[in-house]
Amino acid sequence: MEGKQLLMSIKGIVPRHGMIPSDFLSKRFGLSPRSAVVIGGPCHAEEVALEKKTYVTIAAEDRMAAETIASSIRLDFIRTIVNDDPMGVEIAAIMKNIIGVACGIAHGLNYGDNFQAVLVSNALGEVAQFLAKLDGKPRSLANSSYFGDLLVTAYSEFSRNRMFGQMIGRGYSVHVAQKEMNMVAEGYYAVEGIYTMARKMKQELPVISTVYRILYNKISPYVEFKLLEQKLI
Image 1: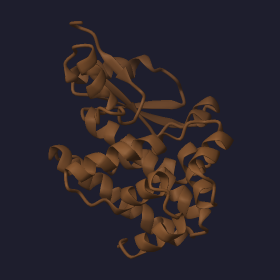
Image 2 (image 1 turned 90 degrees about the vertical axis):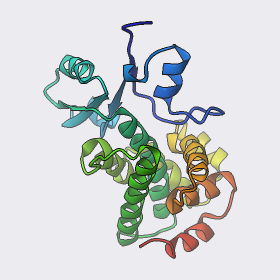
Image 3 (image 1 turned 60 degrees about the vertical axis):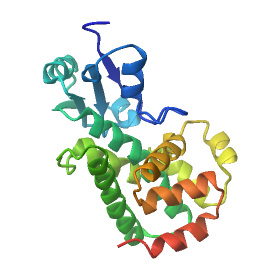
Image 4 (image 1 turned 180 degrees about the vertical axis):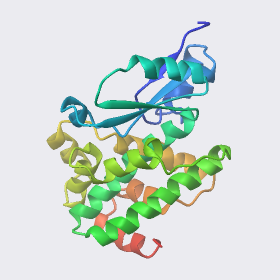
């Protein structure tokens, strides 16, 4: 497999393995982790189809590989950005789906914009905290591939995760919400993996934990968000 590369667009935690897809597939195919190239957003497919201006991040430890792939995407409405932090981009993309679910739940419970601003700002802090604990690598998260991708998932009408969370906040069960949507809300699956990883690292992530308990422990969204209110700053 020498000379081969993995181009990753899927974002999640591999069930039963507790690994991000790039690590899992690199190991599965006997490739160096440096072979992974991660595509990041914000890039909702609906807006790409409408040819709305979009910024796409191509992240790889091998900068030449990232630049080669970035240069192959030649569309007037897409700008490619090269990044050397594939793991950070991948983890941020996984967590933003969970935070999108949280924002949807808040909306479904009739919280307003003021509360959502507090919820999102706290969630941004959880992403930064999780990444810092995971590898200690210094990185600026205030750009499109990290917080930009998170914000579009938190606020966009096209966000499947936000839509799923909104249904949960309005009283739908997980099963019914998934059936009604007829689409995959990645945050439902991702939260179990991130929550488990955070516990192993002894990290306190209130927003992530709240979503986990609502979806997997079937605790009332109303009760959980009332408790969460006291933990947000």
